[in-house]
Image (cartoon, rainbow, N blue to C red; front, side, top):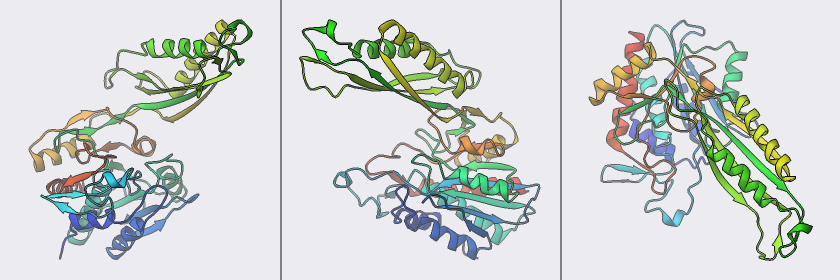
Length: 381
């Protein structure tokens, strides 16, 4: 029986212009392919976001392996800066170019291909669940969370989950993610009184209050790291006044900070700390300060064990490299999956993701499918 070619499938997916929230034909393509292979497929769309749930095997089986991934991609940016068409999937010197080539249409193609080959060639004593979303690159409000809500309502349960995000910094196989830092963003608005720069006593300048608060937040050591995480970080990402005049004290200015935090904190504890710091500066300066905070995700950690060992062994067998167990990087949909079952992330080298001329070596696509195939074979052995 002919196996699914992950390179050809990656190319087909890249040619679907699925910039969030557009489905672009990507999930339709996968639904058709999986249905023909015997998977029961359900579209779980919500608020204009497209999601796909696919299951093979008996519902509720004690050994149910899950994959999670996304087909939505970030915008191409300046298309004229691309040397290859961003949705062309053109190949040059053994490298495929296109938006989503790395993040993460190749990952989805590889786990879909591995899953289909398994159930066609050696149907396992168990079940497979694939959850594929079209809302990972944007706000992630109606993507994997919606799929998990559907699964809960239908009593669908994964035993373990592998998220196919790019995880390797430079070399195929060198890193897998067993956790992620949490993320908190706070938007500040500082409100003073506009006035003439020559008569500052008649105004209330919000800028010194902004500078004072930003310095205190950025200078504070949140922690020195924990057993499985590096130290938490706070970055001031913007400070804005929108004031073109040199003789006017502005009435308002704004700033934004982002915190990437480890398991020494929670989103709630950091929000409380930010509010305390904000209130202190407001009292000292007399400037009204509004702080709006959004928690994108909490930190999480899957202790090394059977799942990480299974994936590590498959990676080493196919690449000769033993992957580092890491909690570095930004957020991913693993932050939602961790509430459902043990979750680990492993995928391609991510050096070109979100960049102009995003690309993936064909050899790495072949390797990744082989790794996923070995993971499934060993899991159901």
